[in-house]
Length: 290
Image (cartoon, rainbow, N blue to C red; front, side):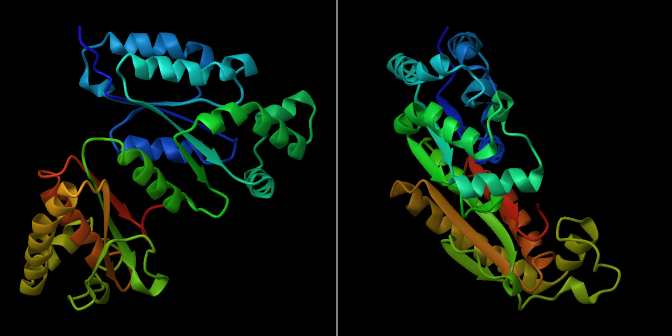
């Protein structure tokens, strides 16, 4: 039976570095994700999923952390090389941050660092973990420093890094509020503030552009229909040119005043239309998603 795994990503890094956020971002890309798998089980896990003729396992991401014994972690680089030599594209994503940032995160969440069980202080545990994971850091295909990165920025960095290693271009559609600032890493921005605003309709104010009452209200307006048609025409015309130029990741931002009605509706509509043409279309509503 032919192998079904076309892409395997190992996600690792410092505790508190953002591994869970990275795995959720990979789920958005269609990866089957497994977190906290002991390093000793990696070879058998890979063999098992390769025995399955199941498209669900075509792209797999595995989270591994320093709770695995150091000897097992040290064997991971060689194991990855063997997997890749057998014909499965295999990369490692490492999430890092400075000691001060990690301490702050553990203080805010009141979580216990996994290595403090060895009667070490938190700074000592962080330094010990850095030493344990150094061989993985050196082997990593991508290292993301999350010290000054929020969860939304980290998710986009993961999409950019790992999404670019697939054979398809990733299209990200993001709604936002101009009053809260324009996203810094978008390729195109469309302004929906000239469209009629459901916020000024008392019965619609508490809804969002994902809700049927707002959608139905907006779809009655000819300007809304024209904007959907024109923006969609532009994207369908030019996104394939980016793809032919081997661009792996394109972000389109659509903004309105509050980022909850018009921009959300437009992003949702465009996503429905573009999903037929592009395999990886990701949606992020900045003002209504945590």
